[in-house]
Length: 153
Image 1 (cartoon, helix red, strand yellow):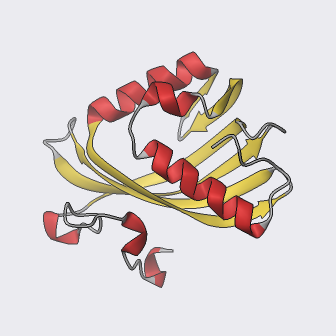
Image 2 (cartoon, rainbow, N blue to C red; image 1 turned 135 degrees about the vertical axis):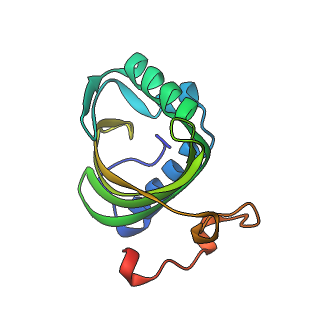
């Protein structure tokens, strides 16, 4: 992911977003953390922290709770070394009886010149969904093929 560097064009910004999507869908905190600077600043909902070690700790705890996680990210906007992303992900909530939930959200990313993210801000809301309301079912091989209607954008 760090091979795609600012300043971004429409093409490179979209590639960066899809590379991040693929990386996060690995659910590998150590691998994911390498896409961020050593002093990367994060705000994730109501949590604020800095650095790769904190990112690894956060992601490890996240996926202890969020089982069967599948994520889709779409480019919202970009300029120079910044990208805004809209995303959706579905998961089974281990802290709430394994109920299916979907998170709707936006992210604001700022990159260093080498292509690693130096700041990430995320705002998201979880909505409980039933099995029948899932988009990213086990039968869906590529989350990018799912038609998400305008009411969810």
